[in-house]
Length: 228
Length: 85
Image 1: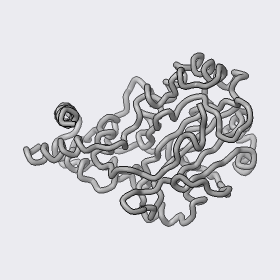
Image 2: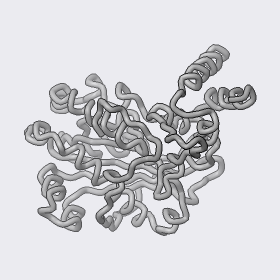
Image 3: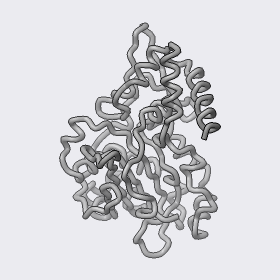
Image 4: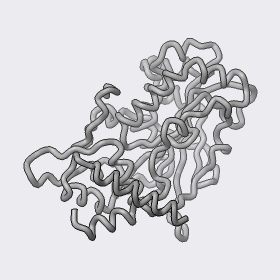
């Protein structure tokens, strides 16, 4: 690399913003952040499993970045009581291709995002039988955020966010194909945001998409210890 | 501020020097790529293989490439609007 290139690269590194994935100590909700014993108890009991989920997403799904405080046993805003969901919140690195922009509506983009990444993440959250069996766990939730096509406002881009919360039996039945995608959507709680603004109910569709399990980034070398 | 920039420059230098998996040409191609998202086209993961050998990139290198091409603030929902700890 020439001296000029190196200088440019160094300057770019110095100007780097917040696009990188949160490290595990920031991505996984810290024990002292939990506001109830139920949440703290789940997080304590299943700390190794949660770390394993983080590692698998980080190394095996390099197009996803877990955000700060995005992985843990959280509650959904607006839900009564202290129902705890094993939650993961990721930033999806989605290029705004003509195909993606051409999906047209927020509902179609959300459907595409959830079909491609959300179902895969639900599968990873629900994979541990011990977590599933714990009576303190109410369900699983996946929150996805991505850049909105043509969403530039002044100097800022706008992101869209989709959150899907479902009780653990519903998630298990959906992943085992014992209930249809439509039934799953009907039973799930779905929230969506355009930037900071909550948007109305989205007619979410879920279809088969094997991107997450079949796509191998060209030249990408995953950590062998994780076992992608 | 000056210390932070110096630290960032030093860190960047160390990280760049450590990127032994890709050749300088491949790294330059990676770094200058205008799109930095995984997509159906998967442009960000495409390396130009000019020497006949398969270039490789690690997760930490992906992190760096994203950070270098990040444009700044994004209008998005806060955690408190969706989840509680």
